[in-house]
Length: 113
Ligand SMILES: [Zn+2]
Image (tube, rainbow, N blue to C red; front, side):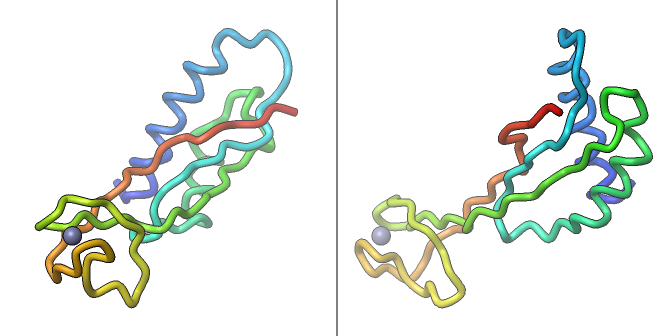
């Protein structure tokens, strides 16, 4: 399975659980948040979604991806800070070694028709 397929499978399982109690309405979109270090293809996500999410409640729904900036954590002072492409040192103590904190994709919210 590709990364997108695995991710969509997980989103699908969660959404099925969330929507199981709903007696009416249809899903419009699922908003998934992940950091921009993850190279997720939104086109592939939606192709997989259409193959997996076949129940009527999912009909015509899609996945929307919101990117967050990645965060770093300083090896010296342990402060967390937002990373951009130019970040070379901790903005608090200017130490040059930090680790990148990965945020795994999560469902932020969803909207119904
Ligand atoms: Zn620091």
